[in-house]
Length: 152
Figure 1 (tube, one colour):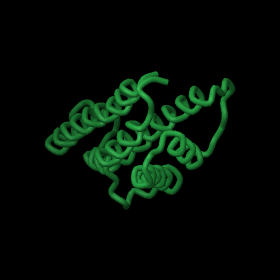
Figure 2 (spheres, one colour):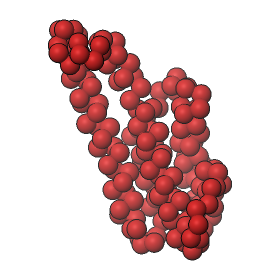
Figure 3 (tube, one colour):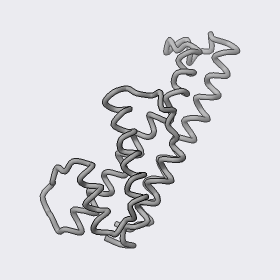
Figure 4 (cartoon, one colour):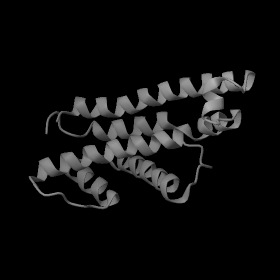
């Protein structure tokens, strides 16, 4: 894999998020104007469902983004350490191990851990009150990925 491919995987999540946000915003607008629109009626979707979806969209895509990021780190670690069998490593330890091997600065590592902790609050505690930002999470994880080698 290449670092550019890794960036592309993360950018793809951002692009999907942008498409989903645009589509849900438009559907929400349509459903508010005419709640009997066929797609809304067929799926029993209310205007409030679109509103709730928009409110949770960043959190939903942060889960997806971090899953991609974690898969990239696992791929790198497996390749870099020449481990052929799958290793289950806690994500916190995985981040620390990759950061140590690639000389990731403390600030970048701490920011990546903040995204990991945000992901954990969303996934395990349904905590959406933190008003997460996919754009910020993407920026943080891209910076971490920039420390990976050009090819692994």
